Amino acid sequence: MTIAITDANVFIDLIKLQLLGYLFRINLEIYTTQEVIDELNESQLLIMQAFIQSQSLIIYKFTEEEIIEIHNVQAPKGLTFEDKTVAWLAIKLTALILSGDNLLRKYCLKQQLDVKGVIWLFESFIEYELINHVTAIEKMNELLSFNSRLPLAECEERLRLWKSRL
Image (cartoon, rainbow, N blue to C red; front, side, top):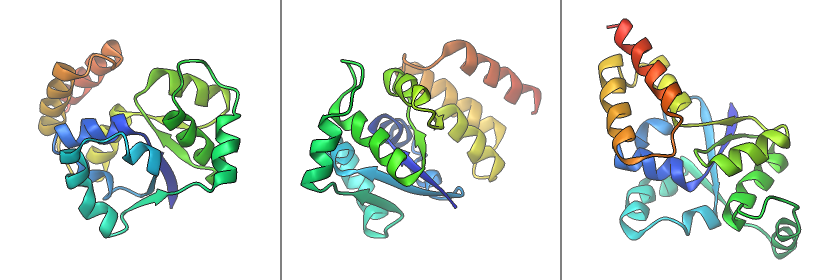
């Protein structure tokens, strides 16, 4: 099974779309860092608790030595410590990264890490028959209404593709 390290924006988007449970039903072993969990608000944490308690979501807690090593990572100025923890853990575990953060994605690609985003997750949910094309279209439109960071042209192309499969 592929290990995937997830950052906060993926969790937040999936929670808003009421699709979070599907993340744990595709063929991935989902990890995140304590630092990412700390970015979530109380209501988001409440939703995450079931996945944490069932160990569907594995939270990696760094040692003091690892924290120092992460702080010393050379990365672009805008990359947060939380984002660095995601990249560092992906390197350590040879894992896929799930993120919608453009700066983190660019940094990870330079590090030759595999990075996927929410569009890829939608395709995975369809592949695993967790959602159909109608639901994918509905949820993508909803996502576009509150997430302006998405690559609009790619989203529109995906919407056209899904509509052609109805």
